[in-house]
Amino acid sequence: MLKVVVAISYLEIFDSIIKYNPIAITLDVNMPESNGWKILKLLKTDINLRHIPVHVISGEDNKIMALKFGAKSFSLKPLSNTSLDELISGIVQFYDHAKKRIW
Image (cartoon, rainbow, N blue to C red; front, side):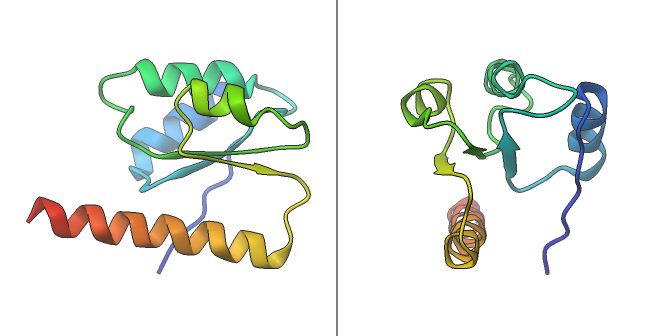
């Protein structure tokens, strides 16, 4: 079973990552209190956090930039229920596959 944690401020995001050790992050680059691009760059340059797959969701078509900065995937808003289901299923499948390779 997956748990979802919502964080909107810069400190809240990183505190939640440390506290919950997520298997993946979905990141909206246009957050009210934070800059998603800056957060993505920080996540992907931090040796302790860069292994976490980040899936960018945005209202602006910035797929090339998202992938350039290290995002695992990019989705353009609004997401349909089917697209959201596929994204979540992909996160779970990637995690299960990565877990099997470790052992």
